[in-house]
Length: 173
Figure (cartoon, rainbow, N blue to C red):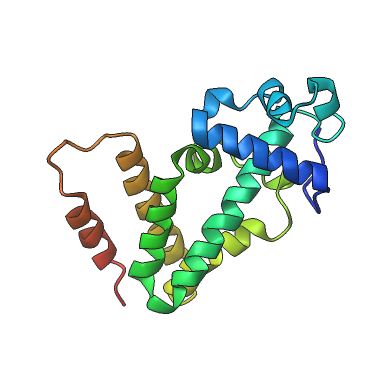
């Protein structure tokens, strides 16, 4: 079983960057140990010295995604709920493969760096005045809207901006 991510070695950072680039450019099917090794110009067995399996490889990418989305929401936090939610949406739409990897399967919390998930949730929690139930509802709304948008589940003529604004209005304080 992979160990939780505490600190990354330089080689693990390179592996994470190569994996992320493959995912962003070619989609989830490209995220294999062999493809990452090829991208780094090494043999797959050498990769296993630094990342024990595909779960650990995916966790590196997920952790990177959580750190990024936390940073964009933290930057938006001074502008309030709408800005934090829009930062979330903008990130997800700009990075759909990473977003899906982060959110469309069970989260391996045991492998993430300590405090990372909490850091990513904090801007939402702060935006609703510390109310955990409201923060979860805000996240559920944002995630649901974004997921439906990413998966092209709305009719082509749907006004997603209006739906987004209407949904967020229920969180106005």
